[in-house]
Image (tube, rainbow, N blue to C red; front, side):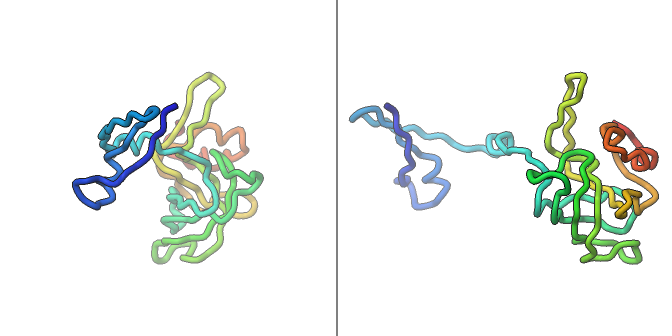
Length: 169
């Protein structure tokens, strides 16, 4: 039976030195191995999850808001995926925009970092989480949508957002 545990490094008392050295023991025999954690190891182990409460999203329309923090994902307790509606609070806004900082708004998730499978077997994943602000009836507040928008929004009945989009992915 193998046991793995962290020990203090003899070279110093720094936290990184302690994480780089580990002891692996089998029975009464112990051997010391050194392993360095790199940035790429940590980056590729990052888990991409739903858009949930507290997630900050980029606003990709010309409504006046720049960043929105998700307060609640509607219709799902786990979180929001592509095409789902969220309730958010405006954290950053442009001056003289249609929405102001601190406003509570509705939004449709148009880009999500979480991978989503398509019916043809391919997968779609974006680099950022982005939202388009809508009113309570589901109509967009802005008149333009920037960047790519997935065609899965058509299934969720957000055709007006697709009509305003520059590029449909």
